[in-house]
Image 1 (cartoon, rainbow, N blue to C red):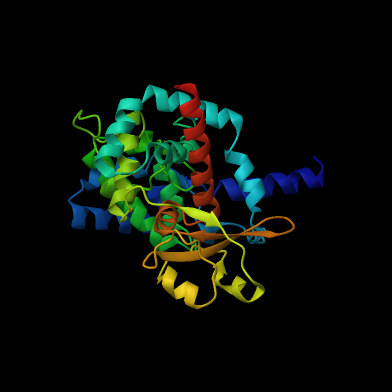
Image 2 (tube, rainbow, N blue to C red):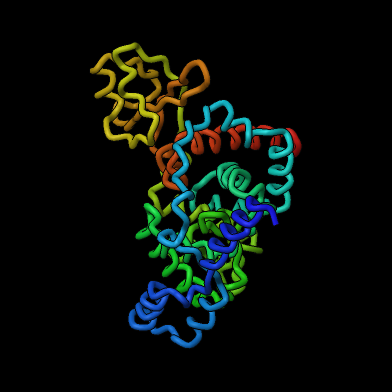
Amino acid sequence: MPILLIILLLFSQSIFAKTQPATNFQVTHNFINKMVKEHQFNKTELLAIFSKINLVLAEDRPKSAAKKPKSKPMSWDKYRSLFITDTRIKNGVKFWQDNLETLKRAEEKYNVPQEIIVAILGIETNYGLNQGQHPTLETLAKLSFSKHRRQKFYKKELEEFLLMSRENSLAPLLIKGSYAGALGYGQFISSSYRHYAVDFDFDGKVDLFSSAADAIGSIANYFDRHQWHDFGAYARPIKLKKTQLKYAKSSTNKPRKNAKYWRSKGFTIDSDIDDKTKLAFIKLPQKNKSETWLTFWNFYILTRYNHDNRYAMTAVQLSNKLLQQFNQTNL
């Protein structure tokens, strides 16, 4: 047998030999004991569940598995082009028509516009079509028990996932989601599922995997609970002087100062904006330039769903396209 082939076989075996049932690791037992003590889970049942998933913990990986270099963030125009497409708009209008009464009811209860709810569902899963195929328990266990930089966050989400599964009579091993553990139509993380998801079809359970009604109500409730301003504005393009550009953030920017303050600093704020309205400024980098935007409170709340200005602006612009097409279709 050629020496190179032998080396490759030995190397591959050294990797796969370290793929073991989760219950072979002490960290798993520590977690199970915590769930039994703090949340009264059945230890035997948890051991049976975790024995059916396999892990390769970070400290067991070969040194050759070096960290990937950080990639440059995707430009705003390319990011937008992934989601604002004719197909996604067409699918969104169809989803809107199919779920019109539920969307109306969500809007009436939470004062979140129907088109924003539809846009979020379009961005997240193409209206429920792409919810993810990664086994969520295994995903969260790997991220929780290895030396991931957000290990503490994911361990909490693993805890929330098991609580969420028990509360909604879901089988943990059968649940699938994104590569990072997001779930269902709206890609809620487990803690958001527990705290913001609602039974909007009144069938006695909260189901974000197959109930479009629960997904619609849950997204509206999420925004409402994050202090959504009823039917408030989102953003306007604005031209800034060179000396003002430092106030436009690439990261999310919470409106803290009102229009009167910004006017006093020499910013040209549209006259129809009340002095008391709190504003912020963001920039969206493109290949050769950056767009600058004046943003209102609800734009910031959109970034609570996903902490990325590009995401929030895509939701705004997709919602506008959806509303325009929906109105034309239903004349």
